[in-house]
Image (cartoon, rainbow over all chains, first blue to last red; front, side):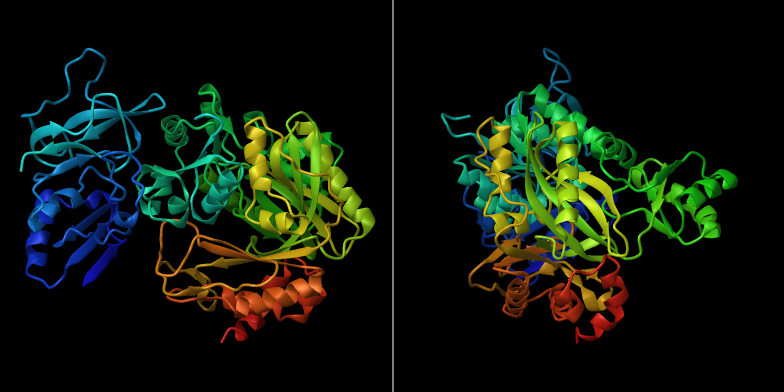
Length: 171
Length: 458
């Protein structure tokens, strides 16, 4: 059974916290759903027991770029990838930080400067972890979640798309 | 560009994105779609060779950011960006950003977009080109009651109060007399300021029974111009077009000549580049023809012109932007066939045209000679709630208008879209009306007939 919920009335600033998402997973875990997609305003969360996500974009064959996510919500929280862990997928095990928009991702405030954060650093939702440049406009990227950076999934200066995983956190 | 295969970035969504993908493929180009997260599984995304996810679903964070589109064009290695209609199609900023990157824009130059982008300057262009315009006046101060009243009497009543920077039929008010004008003007200025960022107002004569007739042009950017006949788009609800046809019915040779020559003069004056539309009001109670505006983009209703003349305007836009010959022919002022377009929107006509989005069930399209469907929907798809309600366009072509109306009526009957309410029953009701069949109707007709048309919906 698949469900797809949308809550368009939820304001954009009421994005769920990571803990709320975990609570949600726990609650749904005791239910009979195989796959669930929920949208809170700009944030979409997709969960599956079997690995087949209800996101229709999952059906698209030609991926836009290596590592790029095809669907997803608007903020840095992207719950789809890691939830596969519950279904026995061991590749991605922690929360991830995704690109809020297409652009060029930089880990440093300026060339030669120290990176905003390094693997092993602790981040909070409002911690700046990088910059996405679009036509010389610099957009700070915040972690959106609390945790410890495990690794960066893209190189400094890489072209990224909206929803693409930028960094993984320790689980 | 990889070898001889140019790359086209499509900066739009819905049916027009799919339309541009098809045109790109026709000219042997690679089609790259810049899509929001809500559109990564759209028909256009699946037809495209590549998809770049630019941002989240809300257009203000994706399709409406010129820098984001330009950046996507850079990532795509695009030779040309096609903006479709709406969104950034008439924004000089996108065009300028692309010019800096050496990427072509499938549309007019930025200076043209500025010249026709607001009503006062567009009117000035028309005047310079010797094109008939309505008596219009710009209001200097909405609170100077005396001055506003003088302007009103110079134009005559009834008149329309328009926002200088408005568009798409929004921000327009009717004043039947001086009292209405002086009371509505400050209110209109306030609303215009909120909606369009400028409270500047403009007054023009209101014609109670006029038609909306527009001329399709294609300029080479150096003053050369091709005219591809005219369209009648008079079946409108609240200034939104519902049904369009090519050619405009029942136009005298003289009127048609004035319309086409006026459009040609404006294009020459602007050294207009690419596809555009010059809109006119054609009065049914007098001989007046009045310039309305230039739409500096491909329009929703372009397929009726394409079908009536057998041309591909979108492919021609791309070819011109790539610096290649467009292959467009010289055509006669009246095409050899009549084409009618019906706009199928995800709106419920029985509930005051309330938009409805959500999962769509089975979709069945008509088939037969001269039928074309430009659509963003298919069986089992989800209609996203974030964007405008145009779901599909049903276009039919036949040897004359009566045959085209019959074909359109049969095509509507053979169409079914399950799961959401659409405008199909309303379109059927209009096609069944003797006044529409006799044609042409004025733009006020649909609104005046709506209450009785509504009864035919059940």
